[in-house]
Length: 204
Image 1: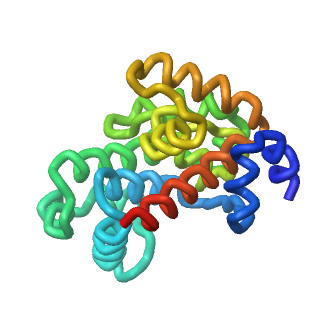
Image 2 (image 1 turned 180 degrees about the horizontal axis):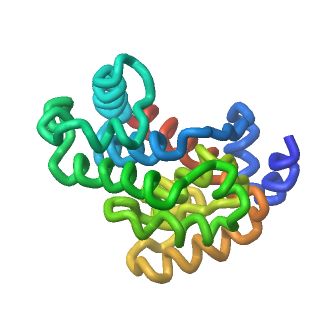
């Protein structure tokens, strides 16, 4: 794949990519549901997040609900599937934003990465990291770098022996290193996550 040849210029990153399957980015149409699922999964393990999402879909006869259906669902019902008060509120905020302003994939496709972030970050409960994940895994953007992601930080600290004592300098060094990966920084992030997860599994 095209991204591999470019990222191979970074010798340390090349070792990770050579030992990993190529990644193919996918695009999703229902961005409202993607954001809702992202909010549900925050601070949860993948397994628990999957269980809660399945319970959520079951509320709507196994189909992705419309924003109107989400808003019409009593908060008590949403709390009953394992969501906190805050998450219930945030999910409804996303649904209301979809109704009021829209987040159609075609509409967002015309925006730059930063424009998408500025557009969606006004939703209470949606932060920069959440929109970066949407850019990567729902809009299929190839050049997104999640500098605030703890997994990416830990992987780069380990791989590049970066001093982690000063958070500001850490991020500056991460941005400096990642600049060379453009226009394929999303793929670099994916391989860093995979490497970190595999390394953690081996230690266990």
